[in-house]
Image (cartoon, rainbow, N blue to C red):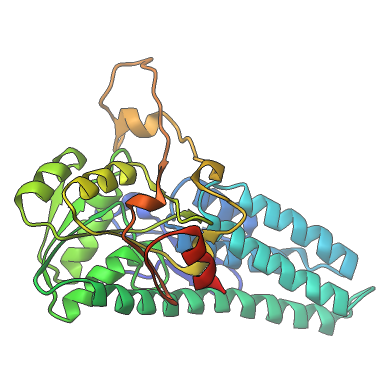
Length: 353
Protein backbone atom coordinates (compact mmCIF):
# COMPACT_ATOMS: atom_id res chain seq x y z
CA UNK A 1 0.00 0.00 0.00
CA UNK A 2 1.09 3.57 -0.73
CA UNK A 3 1.09 5.76 2.44
CA UNK A 4 -1.65 8.36 2.82
CA UNK A 5 -0.59 11.50 0.97
CA UNK A 6 -2.80 13.91 2.93
CA UNK A 7 -4.57 13.49 6.27
CA UNK A 8 -7.16 16.21 6.90
CA UNK A 9 -8.55 16.44 10.43
CA UNK A 10 -10.37 19.77 10.21
CA UNK A 11 -7.85 21.32 12.58
CA UNK A 12 -4.75 20.61 10.51
CA UNK A 13 -3.46 18.83 7.43
CA UNK A 14 -0.76 16.16 7.64
CA UNK A 15 1.30 16.18 4.44
CA UNK A 16 3.47 13.24 3.41
CA UNK A 17 6.86 14.84 2.70
CA UNK A 18 7.66 13.33 -0.70
CA UNK A 19 11.12 14.92 -0.73
CA UNK A 20 12.22 12.23 1.72
CA UNK A 21 10.82 9.24 -0.17
CA UNK A 22 11.60 6.42 -0.57
CA UNK A 23 14.08 6.52 2.32
CA UNK A 24 11.79 7.89 4.99
CA UNK A 25 8.07 8.33 5.62
CA UNK A 26 7.50 11.62 7.42
CA UNK A 27 4.52 13.98 7.69
CA UNK A 28 4.57 17.77 7.86
CA UNK A 29 1.76 19.65 9.57
CA UNK A 30 -0.05 22.48 7.80
CA UNK A 31 -2.41 24.54 9.94
CA UNK A 32 -3.43 27.24 7.47
CA UNK A 33 -3.26 28.29 3.83
CA UNK A 34 0.26 29.70 4.18
CA UNK A 35 1.62 26.38 5.44
CA UNK A 36 -0.19 24.54 2.65
CA UNK A 37 1.13 26.88 -0.04
CA UNK A 38 4.67 26.45 1.31
CA UNK A 39 4.37 22.65 1.13
CA UNK A 40 3.19 22.96 -2.49
CA UNK A 41 5.89 25.44 -3.49
CA UNK A 42 8.69 23.47 -1.82
CA UNK A 43 7.45 20.21 -3.41
CA UNK A 44 6.88 18.45 -0.13
CA UNK A 45 3.70 17.52 -1.94
CA UNK A 46 3.54 17.41 -5.73
CA UNK A 47 1.48 16.01 -8.58
CA UNK A 48 -1.23 18.14 -10.15
CA UNK A 49 -4.32 16.39 -8.70
CA UNK A 50 -2.78 16.14 -5.22
CA UNK A 51 -1.87 19.83 -5.30
CA UNK A 52 -5.53 20.59 -6.00
CA UNK A 53 -6.74 18.42 -3.13
CA UNK A 54 -4.24 20.04 -0.76
CA UNK A 55 -5.29 23.52 -1.86
CA UNK A 56 -8.93 22.73 -1.04
CA UNK A 57 -7.90 21.48 2.40
CA UNK A 58 -5.67 24.51 2.98
CA UNK A 59 -8.54 26.83 2.07
CA UNK A 60 -10.81 25.12 4.60
CA UNK A 61 -8.14 25.36 7.30
CA UNK A 62 -7.70 29.07 6.65
CA UNK A 63 -11.42 29.73 6.95
CA UNK A 64 -11.47 27.90 10.28
CA UNK A 65 -8.51 29.98 11.48
CA UNK A 66 -9.96 33.35 10.40
CA UNK A 67 -13.56 32.75 11.56
CA UNK A 68 -15.09 35.47 9.31
CA UNK A 69 -17.89 37.32 11.13
CA UNK A 70 -19.74 38.76 8.13
CA UNK A 71 -20.31 38.18 4.43
CA UNK A 72 -17.95 41.04 3.54
CA UNK A 73 -15.24 39.71 5.83
CA UNK A 74 -15.71 36.25 4.39
CA UNK A 75 -15.22 37.45 0.82
CA UNK A 76 -12.08 39.43 1.66
CA UNK A 77 -10.61 36.40 3.40
CA UNK A 78 -11.68 33.98 0.66
CA UNK A 79 -10.16 36.04 -2.17
CA UNK A 80 -6.88 36.50 -0.30
CA UNK A 81 -6.72 32.80 0.53
CA UNK A 82 -7.38 31.70 -3.04
CA UNK A 83 -4.73 34.11 -4.35
CA UNK A 84 -2.19 32.89 -1.79
CA UNK A 85 -2.71 29.28 -2.76
CA UNK A 86 -2.68 29.93 -6.52
CA UNK A 87 0.64 31.77 -6.22
CA UNK A 88 2.37 28.61 -4.94
CA UNK A 89 3.03 27.14 -8.42
CA UNK A 90 2.07 28.47 -11.87
CA UNK A 91 1.67 25.48 -14.22
CA UNK A 92 -0.62 22.85 -12.66
CA UNK A 93 -4.18 23.95 -13.40
CA UNK A 94 -5.64 21.66 -10.72
CA UNK A 95 -4.34 24.13 -8.13
CA UNK A 96 -6.29 26.98 -9.74
CA UNK A 97 -9.36 24.80 -10.24
CA UNK A 98 -9.52 23.80 -6.57
CA UNK A 99 -8.79 27.26 -5.17
CA UNK A 100 -11.40 28.88 -7.44
CA UNK A 101 -13.93 26.19 -6.62
CA UNK A 102 -13.52 26.84 -2.90
CA UNK A 103 -13.72 30.59 -3.56
CA UNK A 104 -16.99 30.15 -5.47
CA UNK A 105 -18.41 28.07 -2.61
CA UNK A 106 -17.57 30.90 -0.21
CA UNK A 107 -19.00 33.50 -2.61
CA UNK A 108 -22.30 31.62 -2.89
CA UNK A 109 -22.58 31.33 0.89
CA UNK A 110 -21.83 35.04 1.37
CA UNK A 111 -24.49 35.97 -1.19
CA UNK A 112 -27.06 33.78 0.55
CA UNK A 113 -26.13 35.11 4.01
CA UNK A 114 -25.52 38.88 3.75
CA UNK A 115 -24.56 40.97 6.75
CA UNK A 116 -23.19 39.79 10.08
CA UNK A 117 -22.79 36.09 10.87
CA UNK A 118 -24.26 34.57 14.00
CA UNK A 119 -22.16 31.78 15.55
CA UNK A 120 -24.49 29.21 14.01
CA UNK A 121 -23.98 30.79 10.57
CA UNK A 122 -20.20 30.60 10.91
CA UNK A 123 -20.52 26.96 11.94
CA UNK A 124 -22.69 26.23 8.90
CA UNK A 125 -20.14 27.85 6.62
CA UNK A 126 -17.25 25.90 8.08
CA UNK A 127 -19.16 22.66 7.67
CA UNK A 128 -19.98 23.58 4.07
CA UNK A 129 -16.41 24.52 3.11
CA UNK A 130 -14.97 21.36 4.66
CA UNK A 131 -17.59 19.29 2.84
CA UNK A 132 -16.49 20.91 -0.45
CA UNK A 133 -12.85 20.05 0.29
CA UNK A 134 -13.84 16.43 0.91
CA UNK A 135 -15.70 16.42 -2.41
CA UNK A 136 -12.57 17.57 -4.25
CA UNK A 137 -10.73 14.59 -2.77
CA UNK A 138 -13.46 12.01 -3.36
CA UNK A 139 -13.89 13.17 -6.96
CA UNK A 140 -10.15 12.74 -7.51
CA UNK A 141 -10.28 9.22 -6.12
CA UNK A 142 -13.18 8.29 -8.40
CA UNK A 143 -11.55 9.95 -11.43
CA UNK A 144 -8.36 7.93 -10.93
CA UNK A 145 -10.28 4.65 -10.86
CA UNK A 146 -12.15 5.57 -14.04
CA UNK A 147 -8.97 6.61 -15.86
CA UNK A 148 -7.35 3.35 -14.84
CA UNK A 149 -10.19 1.39 -16.40
CA UNK A 150 -10.36 3.42 -19.61
CA UNK A 151 -6.61 3.38 -20.01
CA UNK A 152 -6.22 -0.34 -19.36
CA UNK A 153 -8.63 -1.05 -22.23
CA UNK A 154 -6.29 0.72 -24.66
CA UNK A 155 -3.29 -1.45 -23.86
CA UNK A 156 -2.50 -4.71 -25.66
CA UNK A 157 -1.96 -8.01 -23.89
CA UNK A 158 1.60 -8.52 -22.61
CA UNK A 159 2.13 -4.79 -22.87
CA UNK A 160 5.61 -3.32 -22.46
CA UNK A 161 4.98 0.20 -21.24
CA UNK A 162 7.02 3.26 -20.30
CA UNK A 163 6.19 6.26 -18.13
CA UNK A 164 7.90 9.49 -17.15
CA UNK A 165 7.91 11.46 -13.88
CA UNK A 166 5.40 10.38 -11.23
CA UNK A 167 1.72 10.31 -12.11
CA UNK A 168 0.86 7.61 -9.61
CA UNK A 169 -0.92 7.39 -6.29
CA UNK A 170 1.66 9.76 -4.81
CA UNK A 171 0.50 12.45 -7.26
CA UNK A 172 -3.18 12.03 -6.41
CA UNK A 173 -5.50 10.94 -3.64
CA UNK A 174 -6.45 7.87 -5.67
CA UNK A 175 -4.57 5.18 -7.59
CA UNK A 176 -2.93 7.75 -9.85
CA UNK A 177 -3.37 8.87 -13.43
CA UNK A 178 -0.68 7.42 -15.75
CA UNK A 179 0.66 4.96 -13.18
CA UNK A 180 -2.95 4.20 -12.25
CA UNK A 181 -3.43 3.03 -15.84
CA UNK A 182 -0.41 0.75 -15.48
CA UNK A 183 -1.46 -0.73 -12.13
CA UNK A 184 -5.06 -1.20 -13.32
CA UNK A 185 -3.81 -3.00 -16.44
CA UNK A 186 -1.43 -5.08 -14.29
CA UNK A 187 -4.38 -6.30 -12.20
CA UNK A 188 -6.01 -7.44 -15.44
CA UNK A 189 -2.86 -9.39 -16.36
CA UNK A 190 -2.00 -7.11 -19.30
CA UNK A 191 1.42 -5.77 -18.25
CA UNK A 192 4.48 -7.75 -19.27
CA UNK A 193 6.95 -5.08 -18.18
CA UNK A 194 7.03 -1.40 -17.19
CA UNK A 195 9.87 1.09 -17.48
CA UNK A 196 10.14 4.21 -15.35
CA UNK A 197 12.33 7.08 -16.54
CA UNK A 198 14.25 8.61 -13.61
CA UNK A 199 13.09 12.17 -14.46
CA UNK A 200 15.93 14.58 -13.85
CA UNK A 201 16.46 16.87 -12.09
CA UNK A 202 14.02 16.04 -9.27
CA UNK A 203 14.11 12.26 -9.79
CA UNK A 204 10.39 11.65 -9.35
CA UNK A 205 10.64 8.52 -11.47
CA UNK A 206 13.61 7.13 -9.56
CA UNK A 207 12.37 8.01 -6.09
CA UNK A 208 8.62 7.65 -6.47
CA UNK A 209 7.29 5.89 -9.57
CA UNK A 210 9.52 2.82 -9.48
CA UNK A 211 8.86 2.59 -5.72
CA UNK A 212 5.11 2.54 -6.42
CA UNK A 213 5.44 -0.05 -9.20
CA UNK A 214 7.53 -2.30 -6.97
CA UNK A 215 5.04 -2.00 -4.10
CA UNK A 216 2.23 -2.94 -6.49
CA UNK A 217 4.15 -5.96 -7.78
CA UNK A 218 4.42 -4.66 -11.36
CA UNK A 219 7.41 -6.19 -13.25
CA UNK A 220 9.45 -3.03 -13.78
CA UNK A 221 12.85 -1.43 -14.24
CA UNK A 222 14.28 2.03 -13.73
CA UNK A 223 16.00 3.90 -16.58
CA UNK A 224 17.98 7.09 -16.78
CA UNK A 225 16.18 9.55 -19.05
CA UNK A 226 18.75 9.27 -21.83
CA UNK A 227 18.20 5.50 -22.08
CA UNK A 228 14.57 5.88 -23.19
CA UNK A 229 15.14 5.98 -26.96
CA UNK A 230 17.39 2.91 -26.89
CA UNK A 231 14.94 0.93 -24.75
CA UNK A 232 11.98 1.88 -26.96
CA UNK A 233 13.94 0.79 -30.03
CA UNK A 234 15.30 -2.50 -28.68
CA UNK A 235 12.98 -3.78 -25.92
CA UNK A 236 9.58 -3.94 -27.57
CA UNK A 237 7.96 -0.96 -25.85
CA UNK A 238 4.45 -0.77 -27.30
CA UNK A 239 2.88 2.01 -25.23
CA UNK A 240 3.91 5.14 -23.33
CA UNK A 241 1.65 6.80 -20.80
CA UNK A 242 2.28 10.05 -18.90
CA UNK A 243 0.30 12.45 -16.76
CA UNK A 244 -0.32 16.15 -17.31
CA UNK A 245 -0.24 19.38 -15.34
CA UNK A 246 -2.22 21.43 -17.85
CA UNK A 247 -3.90 20.64 -21.17
CA UNK A 248 -4.72 23.49 -23.54
CA UNK A 249 -8.02 23.74 -25.43
CA UNK A 250 -6.45 22.22 -28.54
CA UNK A 251 -4.91 19.27 -26.67
CA UNK A 252 -1.35 20.58 -26.33
CA UNK A 253 -0.16 19.17 -23.01
CA UNK A 254 2.25 20.48 -20.37
CA UNK A 255 3.93 17.80 -18.31
CA UNK A 256 7.25 17.28 -16.53
CA UNK A 257 10.28 18.33 -18.53
CA UNK A 258 11.38 15.51 -20.84
CA UNK A 259 7.87 14.49 -21.86
CA UNK A 260 8.04 16.31 -25.19
CA UNK A 261 11.25 14.53 -26.16
CA UNK A 262 9.73 11.18 -25.24
CA UNK A 263 6.72 11.93 -27.45
CA UNK A 264 8.99 12.75 -30.41
CA UNK A 265 10.82 9.44 -29.94
CA UNK A 266 7.51 7.59 -29.66
CA UNK A 267 6.29 9.09 -32.93
CA UNK A 268 9.46 8.05 -34.76
CA UNK A 269 9.09 4.46 -33.51
CA UNK A 270 5.30 4.39 -34.06
CA UNK A 271 4.59 3.74 -30.37
CA UNK A 272 1.23 5.01 -29.04
CA UNK A 273 1.72 7.98 -26.69
CA UNK A 274 -1.07 8.42 -24.13
CA UNK A 275 -1.78 11.23 -21.65
CA UNK A 276 -3.88 10.37 -18.57
CA UNK A 277 -5.37 13.34 -16.72
CA UNK A 278 -8.71 14.31 -15.14
CA UNK A 279 -10.89 16.86 -16.95
CA UNK A 280 -10.07 19.73 -14.52
CA UNK A 281 -6.56 19.56 -16.03
CA UNK A 282 -8.01 20.88 -19.31
CA UNK A 283 -7.75 24.66 -19.41
CA UNK A 284 -10.10 26.01 -22.06
CA UNK A 285 -8.76 29.51 -21.42
CA UNK A 286 -5.40 28.38 -22.84
CA UNK A 287 -5.97 28.36 -26.61
CA UNK A 288 -2.83 26.26 -27.20
CA UNK A 289 0.43 25.28 -25.55
CA UNK A 290 1.97 28.71 -26.06
CA UNK A 291 -0.49 30.08 -23.49
CA UNK A 292 0.71 27.74 -20.74
CA UNK A 293 3.07 29.33 -18.22
CA UNK A 294 6.16 27.16 -17.75
CA UNK A 295 7.54 27.24 -14.22
CA UNK A 296 11.27 27.88 -13.86
CA UNK A 297 12.60 26.36 -10.66
CA UNK A 298 15.81 26.88 -8.72
CA UNK A 299 19.27 26.07 -10.09
CA UNK A 300 20.07 24.17 -6.87
CA UNK A 301 17.65 21.42 -7.89
CA UNK A 302 19.89 20.85 -10.93
CA UNK A 303 23.32 21.34 -9.36
CA UNK A 304 22.68 19.33 -6.17
CA UNK A 305 21.37 15.80 -5.59
CA UNK A 306 20.40 15.01 -1.99
CA UNK A 307 22.62 17.82 -0.74
CA UNK A 308 25.63 16.78 -2.80
CA UNK A 309 26.96 19.25 -5.38
CA UNK A 310 27.34 17.66 -8.83
CA UNK A 311 28.25 20.74 -10.91
CA UNK A 312 30.84 23.52 -10.66
CA UNK A 313 30.19 26.45 -8.34
CA UNK A 314 28.73 29.55 -10.01
CA UNK A 315 27.66 27.52 -13.06
CA UNK A 316 24.81 29.10 -15.06
CA UNK A 317 21.72 26.89 -15.02
CA UNK A 318 18.34 26.67 -16.75
CA UNK A 319 15.59 24.74 -15.05
CA UNK A 320 12.24 24.78 -16.86
CA UNK A 321 10.20 22.30 -14.82
CA UNK A 322 7.79 21.45 -17.65
CA UNK A 323 7.60 21.25 -21.42
CA UNK A 324 4.65 21.20 -23.83
CA UNK A 325 3.89 18.24 -26.08
CA UNK A 326 1.94 19.27 -29.21
CA UNK A 327 -1.45 17.60 -29.62
CA UNK A 328 -0.33 16.06 -32.90
CA UNK A 329 2.13 13.82 -31.03
CA UNK A 330 -0.49 12.51 -28.59
CA UNK A 331 -2.37 9.35 -29.59
CA UNK A 332 -5.14 9.84 -27.02
CA UNK A 333 -5.98 11.68 -23.81
CA UNK A 334 -7.53 9.48 -21.12
CA UNK A 335 -9.88 11.23 -18.69
CA UNK A 336 -12.43 10.04 -16.16
CA UNK A 337 -15.09 10.55 -18.86
CA UNK A 338 -13.43 8.37 -21.47
CA UNK A 339 -10.87 8.75 -24.24
CA UNK A 340 -10.20 11.73 -26.52
CA UNK A 341 -8.87 10.44 -29.86
CA UNK A 342 -7.76 11.83 -32.16
CA UNK A 343 -6.60 14.77 -30.07
CA UNK A 344 -7.84 18.08 -31.51
CA UNK A 345 -9.60 21.26 -30.44
CA UNK A 346 -12.94 19.93 -31.70
CA UNK A 347 -12.48 16.58 -29.93
CA UNK A 348 -11.57 18.25 -26.64
CA UNK A 349 -14.60 20.55 -26.87
CA UNK A 350 -16.92 17.64 -27.65
CA UNK A 351 -15.50 15.59 -24.77
CA UNK A 352 -16.27 18.35 -22.29
CA UNK A 353 -19.70 19.22 -23.69
